[in-house]
Image (cartoon, rainbow, N blue to C red; front, side, top):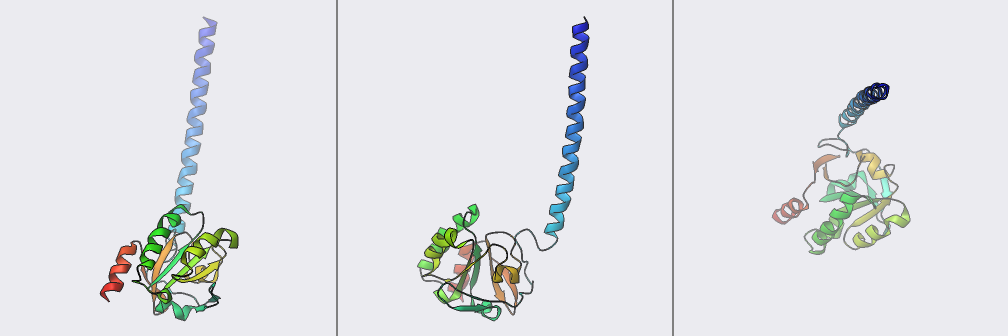
Length: 180
């Protein structure tokens, strides 16, 4: 009988400890949810929203083409991707396919590859003949800082020094360019 009482007390103690740990985990999840909501209030997790101003910047493409904020309005699409990013790796073949069909000429697409030089080689190689390609350090690059990019991939169009639209579907860009 004393063993049975000891077992019941032990099970009760373990259940109480489990309850306390669960309450602690729930409290931490609420804190993290609040922190994520704060980040979302600054333009969303991936960066810019339509109408955000684009700060002045200058940089150079891998083919030595100068790129500045004033040039962004002339691009039909600005794509910011990073090597090792799963969604970026999924979008890259679609972007390459769209560019290879000739709907968008090379000078109308700016592709920013955010990654160290070695990791960026496959993406730069895939896009260098199809778009103006800029390779930058992640997050701190000139284009990313000017636009407010915080996650990859981010695709947008610019107009009048502001983010004109966010691009989620490359087919819509192709249709828009074909129509206009």
